[in-house]
Image 1: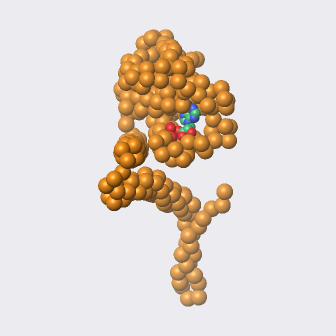
Image 2: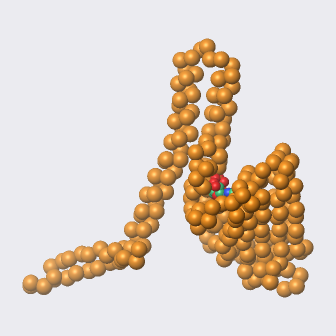
Length: 264
Ligand code: ADP
């Protein structure tokens, strides 16, 4: 809560007097706790896939006569776990890179239509596989002053989630538009939606909504924390509107001072 934590040092002063020095260590302690939590989380998250892999390897070690189906499942599961760990490590690296380079400048003008087209092109095959239909809306010649990598990462993570959580054959709407001098990015899906109580916690590292937590092949819970970081850099915040059973809208607005459009 609002309690401050003080560190006291008491020293003899002169004669019978004592000198007391108080230091406010509230922030320091908070950071220490966060770092410890983080290490504990990473360890915990890596433990599960490693345990699964170990189990399979032991089984393979002593069972020469595994039925082919079992063999296939073992290989498939191990591949899934390895990919998930790989993804997690890559995302952790991305997060720490973002934390290091907080000071990059806003001297680069990033064209939004190219950025969005790149993202869509990259995700095209996955969308086709799920027979998803994509509606795209874009304000031509809209640019943002900032980091191309971070903006790409934000858009990519949000669209990837929309694809991942969409039922097969459904619609996704994605847009990069000028809205009252703000550059607004939004993704709307008709996925399962997210219960209200989870929404404030979505950008926490490793946070996943209840039902996703146990799925081994599922996500890492890091994507939205990367988005949060990328947006902070552009003085923006991730917004979520969602209705269970209907779908979700994830969006953010880049403030006018970082927007470059034909009208401004
Ligand atoms: P993950 O890798 O698990 O997708 P994220 O940080 O990207 O991690 O998302 C955190 C959680 O938020 C997800 O596990 C999922 O429960 C929920 N979520 C994110 N995007 C959507 C979406 N479009 N529809 C429904 N739930 C979502």
